[in-house]
Image (cartoon, rainbow, N blue to C red):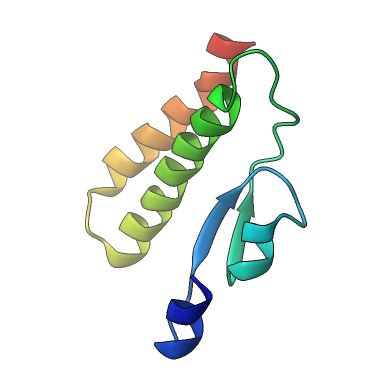
Length: 88
């Protein structure tokens, strides 16, 4: 990843659970999910939050590029707000 980042001047984004991790230090724009230590089923919580953050990021890009109807973007955002009630 370092070679790509420096060689081609590519900005990188990482969805990261732990601040200060190797990945966090290597990307230009870390997105911290801060879901805590994994126990029992390894990485389930991290993966779930990575997917949610990816969806959230996608709605931001879609809104900025106007590549989807704002009504759909807002509907997705509203649905994302309800997710905690299903997993807590």
